[in-house]
Image 1 (tube, rainbow, N blue to C red):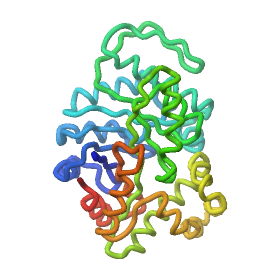
Image 2 (cartoon, rainbow, N blue to C red):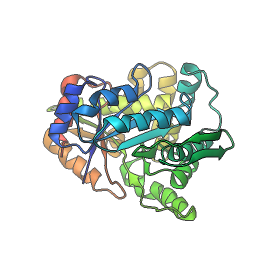
Image 3 (cartoon, rainbow, N blue to C red):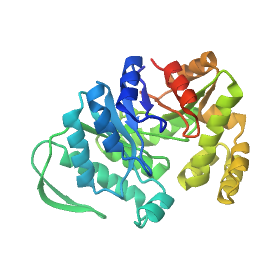
Length: 319
């Protein structure tokens, strides 16, 4: 089973990429919300690793499909391994309050962006595209080894993933519900005449510490942040934990971040993450990694974790 790792915010440097490469991870991913550019981060580490490089995730509003395709294609000239362009609609908060765009028709924009990135990186021909939200006229395709991975939670966005993407990046869907959720992706791909065997690379929020409670607390902070700040995440979690998700979101909206973390139960930590001592966490991660339909889980250290915990987690869960 191959596995990836999301570069922790504590150390997005080439030296860190060298260290990750020495641990045997098959893919290295860079996130992006505010303060970091995923493509710049990956360009800096590309000469230092043979692993696949991925964005997890960049939104489909602040860059046009042409800019996304150009960035991914440029990155492919620097990298030894393949490029995985992880895209998603993000949240209304990020798109409207940070980027100043209307959060309009997110699923359709995801769909058309994926189709256009494929067209723009096909290596031949000229791109013509008449979409409902994006249209393109007469520009040459670029040549890049680029796969498109969609971050999709709800059913309609999972259908868009099946119609257009090469891989799926789920997050905050309980691990034992991924097979059920993926069936929508698989069936839609078949209906579209596509190969239904998409890659499935879920975020696996993970924390390893000698004190298992410290590890669980890191996962609680991660879950509280996502459920509290993103409606799509709240809905995904609420299918299993409806009352808990509502309490977390209510506390977060009221600015009571500590109470929001306290509302994350041990059951939620178990269903949505990996936390514990080195031995226990590694055993749990191996079980998660073997869950259908996962093809390559991504180790994600919560942003509220310190550098020592981040390094311990990445080292413990390495191949």
